[in-house]
Image (cartoon, rainbow, N blue to C red):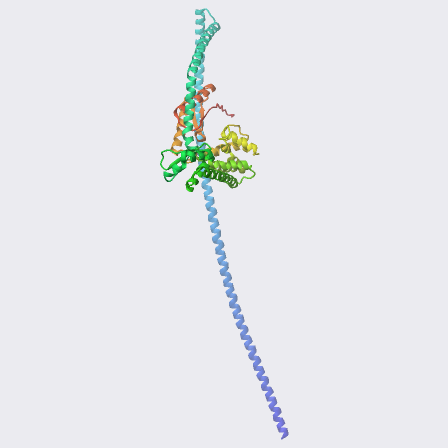
Length: 519
């Protein structure tokens, strides 16, 4: 019994072991199968992924190939277009060259024809000249036979007779001219001075000596004059400016030659009118205070101008003179603004010519500096400006540009020429000065027409806003002495027939050029 149980147990254990083995084997087979299936799935996916990547790579390669093809075709088209353009240009140049060659051939044929004609005319002239010489010789021989004198003896006799007659006539003419000069010199001098004063006075007086102040009402005129005129006298003594109170409604006029004093007087009068307290003590206080303000403003304007123009190292006295130019006008044009324009224009031209633009600008801003002191000293503004610039240590080139901007001195560099050109551009642009564009053009045309009306004049050019007329004469038609006479005649006709400010320089140029060619 016990043994049977043991056998059963052993059998059961063996059966269980077999079953366990079978089960484990089944699991192992199943695992192998699943691994195989998974491997096949992985292989299938890998194959599909590989095919997809292959297709993508092919598509990308095709896209790049199409892109390169398109770019190549565009580049080819562009190069073909450039080639066509160059080919057309070459063909056009070839056509023009052929035209020029044909034209040269035609001119060469024409030249040969004219040369042959000239040779034939020259031959005929030589024949006629020989015939004329023969006839003259025969006539001379006949005259010598008739008169009983040789040719040289006749010449000497004629020279003596003519010399005696000419000397006598010349002496009479000289005496007549001297007598007429004595009689007319005084009247002519008066006439010239009167014309000069008349030309200078009208525009110059209005432009440079007068300021008008609006009062607002007539009652203030009496207060300005004061009891027995004491206020107006105190004002004139304090400012150095004349006060003109006339019948003009609600206006008074300040008249003075110094523009800065006139500006001090104008501002002082406006302050007194606004304040209402007008008496000698108050007048002196206001004028003194205004004078200090103007001095300060002059320095500020000068310093600001130097800063704007990017110029350093200019002497403080010259800076003050630059500020003064703000109160000076020339034919209605503010001199400081004009100087700035000249400086900028000269700098631009200097840059284009490869010169120093800062030096040109310095000469431009200082070129009219003499106008700040020409009311205090004798001399032209160019001369005075050069003197003060040299005095305060300016460069020799700048000093020469100031002195020569109206061609008063010989230039030592190109900078005076630049300043002359810039000065003319600024002064002559339409609207720069108190003259309409139509009047300006008409005056220049009239000046040129007068010069061109004389015999022997080829062309005439009005320069520097009509301040100069340059006349080109034909050297074949007149001598140097005749050219001098024409210059004087043009100047006289301009004086008699035109109205103009200042003076006009007449330059007559007689130039003979001889050209030949070495073949």
